[in-house]
Image (cartoon, rainbow, N blue to C red):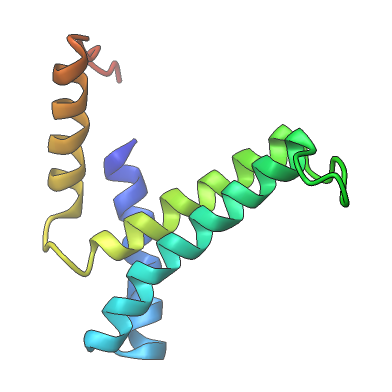
Length: 110
C-alpha cells in the first residue's frame, strides 16, 4: 500500500510543485493541509454522531471514511517535502507501529 500511495502522491506533488513552487511557504501549506483535512474528518464524525444538537445527524460513516482518505493523501503529499524517500520512510514507520503492538505483518503475495 505505501509504495502505491507514495507513487500516486508523487504525481500530485509534481503538479503542486509546478503550480505553487517548492519554497518554505509551500511546505508549510502542505503541512497545514493535513491539519485542515483532520479537522474535516473530525467535523464529519461529529455530524455522523449527531453531537451538535442544532444540526443533528448530518454525515454518514462513508463521509468520515472519505475525509480520512483526504487526511492520508494530504499527509502523504506533505511527507514528500521532508524526505527524498517517502515509501521507505512510510514502510519503516508502519513496521515500527506493528512491532510496538507485538503484531506481525504478513508478507504480501503477488
